[in-house]
Image (tube, rainbow, N blue to C red; front, side, top):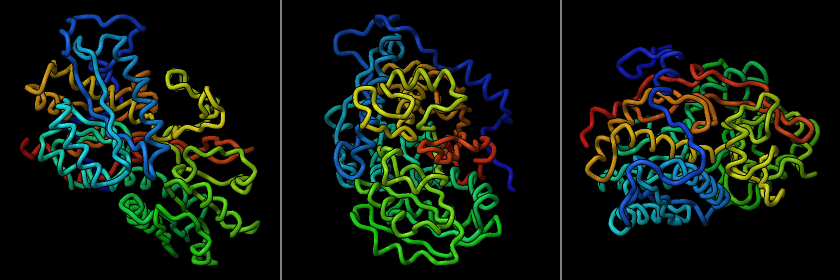
Length: 430
């Protein structure tokens, strides 16, 4: 395997944690804003293009809820450099065209200091080039490999959630060794799905396996029965990742088609984000497996950071809202908004950010960060941040459906998720 090139200095776990701790974020108890008090109207403004409508609406709702919880703690703990932080939300409709328009609105009308929050990759792909043209720092809460592949620009960062290539390459060895080598891929017919198709195909082949079929399904599809006969009989493992409002229908119809004599099933939790695992129609999933970035169900080894995060965003041990047990969160993804806000806070404080004049200094500070330590600000776990590719690398979880709940059976190391650099944004001009 090629050696991964990170920051110029060698990176060990001990150095990662020491570096993150020395520059890390400490959450303060609720209280008044301390330090240099902001004058009237003097604040750090962050644009938040959330998917309030469209196929990503369930994610957008929980992203917004998580962001509000994080900002409450940040502001009660002194804001950023003594300045209060304001969040301005615009609905991008989970639509690429609207995503670009919203980015322009943040720059021209709201005059924000930075933008964060897009998830769906086709919206990100359309918006990132415009962010660069507008010279707007753009912090992604997505998973597309497009950033780390070098397709964007120096204004784009993904400091929290890992990308699909990282996720897939770390889990393919486990899938191949434990479930089988003949894999059928089922994925959404847009950028995010192509990331899964391309990277899983390469990863399975590297394990001596093969993709016996790949089935692309439009994310707006509402019925899936016509796609199921395309699953070959010689399939060892069905690998599925689906998004959109009909994810429950997809999983139910998959179970109805397969019956009792099914192959092994490995899904990305995207296929059931915001869906109750314990409803009767999903009983066939017992014993199957899912990828999770952050486990929805509190585990026996639950960290204090996970406990605090759940309390802050109002989620119980099942990943459901404390206000409504039927309201299931997008727990495997929404942590990225929380962590991204604390990453922005860290970079701004390193640059003594007080306004647009320090934008470049803030981005250079972000590039200099080598990682983040697990804790209240980063509850999902330790991260390595690659300042050249602007991409974060972290642990992945494989969970098995056990008695209607998700139990983690394998957690990758960060080293499992690394791959050789494909770009160096630090060589681009601002």
